[in-house]
Amino acid sequence: MSKTLNRRDFLSYSAMIGAAGIAGSTVLASCTRKGTLPLREKGSYYVPDLMDKAIDGKPLKAGVIGCGGRGSGAIVNLLEAADGITVTALGDTYPDRVEALRKNLKEEHGQDVPEDHCFVGFDAYKKVIDSGVDMVILTTPPVFRPMMFAYATEKGVHSFLEKPVAVDSKGYRQVMATAKQALAKGLSVVTGVQRHHERPYVEAFQLIQDGIIGEITGGNVYWNGGMLWYRERKPGWSDMEYMIRDWVNWKWLSGDHICEQHVHNIDVFMWMTGKQPLKAVGMGSRQRRITGDQYDNFSVDFVFENDVHLHSMCRQIDGCANNVSEFVQGTKGCWNSQDNTIRDLKGNIIWQFDWDANNAEHTQNNPYVLEHVDWVNHIRRGEAHDEATYTAQSTLAGVMGRESAYTGKEVDWDTISAADMDYLPEKLENGPMDMSKYLVAIPGTPQGNQTR
Image (tube, rainbow, N blue to C red; front, top):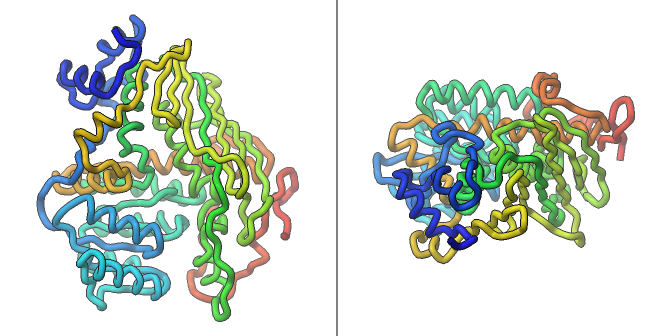
């Protein structure tokens, strides 16, 4: 037998055992090593049906809350994912964002959102949700995600939550509670950790759950890239408006980039293991960031049960070595997302994602679209679906690593999940802010803060 289990083999083995898309542990044991035991039993974890387009069904009215770059992209992804979607409401804190998306939807996608369904202000989310939409895309800065998800769920509206789903402990607890309420109401909730809907990742996930690499003993995850965008302050902008328009650089709005961006990679390891970290010790610094109060690099040692360690590294600095990937080590082999391979302990490739076979079967490979296919499928089938819970847990892991780096202390899961940490300002209005509160953290100091 060939040493490589390719995608054609993967699918044919799945069909043999009557479980399309899921590789059987008995078959895989014969291809790797006798006695392979699954990490988790089938049926105890979710595997999406990654069809190219959502099933037909009842027409759906969609709203967007947060009309910037991610919101504009997400609604186009939704329109590509399914037929029968009408965009009927838009909301943002500032009118120029609403108008830009409204214009794009009309000119490029034939969607004419009525002017009286375009809402502006800090309460725009309520007006969008109350306008009669069936589904809503929540793509504002992450600090607002918990309260908006709670309101959408209260009103019986299906939600797409961009990652991260919170920036602090209070937001994490609110999302966890709301997720339970959404399930009880039969709502479909999908989140923006799109690797859960990316075929190479999903196939690797199934094989790992079936035990192909054995017990997981550790891993490394990375998001090392260049500096993100920033906004210089313009005349006439209040403190609040400046911070929101420059939100990706302020920790109260974004959670810092270990949460806002690196959550993808941390989430992958937690997804593969089915575990959450027990504690973390991290470090980080601010070297070249131009605006805001965030760090631009983190390195965190997460410790899971059985003394399994995950090294997490992220950086947003131009001119450095880049790496965005995940690596998981097991007792019988390893998985590497960089080349979509699983290797045994001798380095032999025993599985590699077969892009040729995939492209012969599928026309849609964009995970940003496929996550919306999954969302619409659940809605049209009348199936409750919850992705908010595991994304909240991945988000909290990012918060735990961030707080360890900020303070220089070891931070454990129980402490951070119960912490009295709330980044949301008491008053949400355009106007002055106490900018002296937004300081860059210095580890090992009593307050953990300094002025810049």
